[in-house]
Image 1 (cartoon, rainbow, N blue to C red):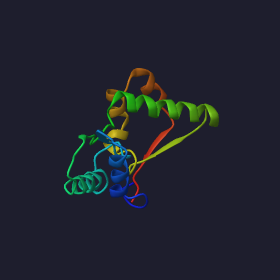
Image 2: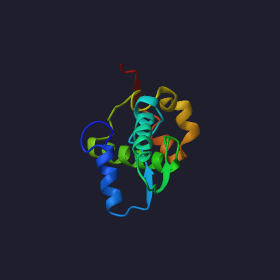
Image 3: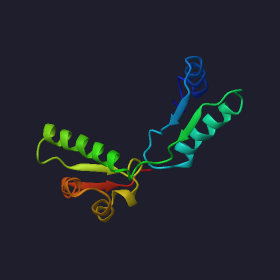
Length: 129
């Protein structure tokens, strides 16, 4: 966890003590942002500079346009929509889904056809501060 407990250094220590040989750092935010994803990578890198041994390391900086991620989000939306009913209206705050990603034009170009039809109606993108 970047801010809070457990601290990144504590988790890395525990992982190395358990014999971890490969480490993939996957941010919770699907799009790259300096204050979020970037600061996490900075913290992991800073911690690793103080260690005598390094694992095989992979940073995943963004995955907002990965078809598997899009399909997983669409499945979650679909399941929630079935639970809540056909007249569900959706709001996508831009802090979660940047406006460029949220736009219907972008969605229609970046997601499979069955997903874009799911997202075609009842959507509002809202800029949050």
